Length: 185
Image (cartoon, rainbow, N blue to C red; front, side, top):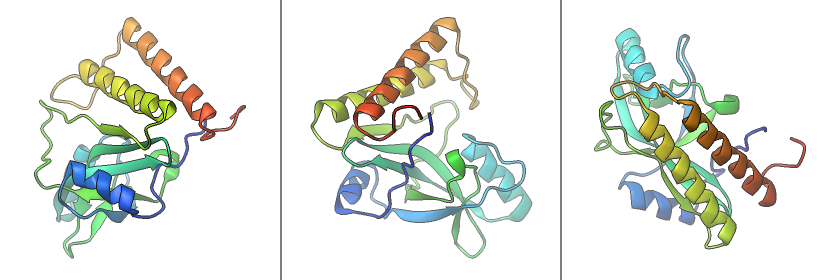
């Protein structure tokens, strides 16, 4: 399945309303320029390594994802603030995306012993949007339960893998039904 582009095209009033539920900061589009050696899904480690190499500082917050009429999602994230104060996402993004919508939240400091779950809400009150948000939460709860505390590592046992496959299969069905992905892709 080719994943849909979930980076919002623009900052709409609905996106702003969702962001206000998460933090008081103003969302901004940030360029994604991964540095050599950075790893997908390891933004906190990537930013720490970038600071060690180039200076600057960490900016904590949330990556904002959205599929119109389906869901909004905020994922705990960190980007690099260079010495000039510019924000740059130094972590590789799925499908090679070149930018993301970032909601700064300096209160959202990363604690590897107490990871923050994604916040996922339906974009409408339709059954399909409500189900999609519930599936996203179920996936996050599984990841939280299987995380090796103090690391970004997941330890999925056989039963966990079966559960994840069932969730992912249903997410794909919901996305096909919603027309987000085409049959056969």
